[in-house]
Image 1 (tube, one colour):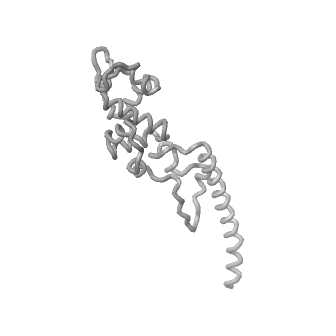
Image 2: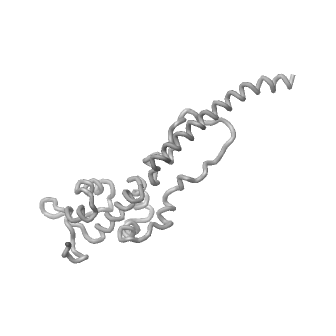
Image 3: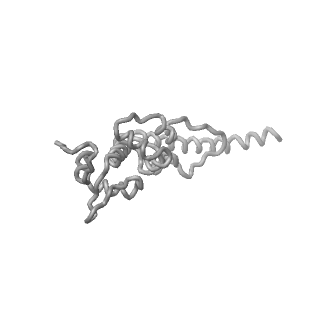
Length: 175
């Protein structure tokens, strides 16, 4: 049972236990999120203030609970600031502001006429790759994307075959 005041500083082991993550993950997050700035005392011991803990809780919730990537979370911190992520760490709902920082990966793709790029068939579109600033797609969604990319490549091949068949007919009609 924690007998410290809510305003007391916490050691890295206390924060790691509270967040149920290893201490090395907290140290790693410090290298990826410049907003995490614990006080460092003699011997390099880290002491986390209440705002630091709230920020870490928000980061944990967005990374582990909501599936955001590190780059996606860096974008949220840049666009909306650490106070927004601290509020999420304190239990605030993940509102439209966070959603607005991330494009909707399930929005309908625009259909276009003309040639289709088949050089990257089977690959997820760049906006759906893990480094994008949005939640990671589930395994089922990744499988669905791969199937759709394969179908798209097959349709492009059908289009090429049909053009090859139809072009000689069109030339014969004009003669």
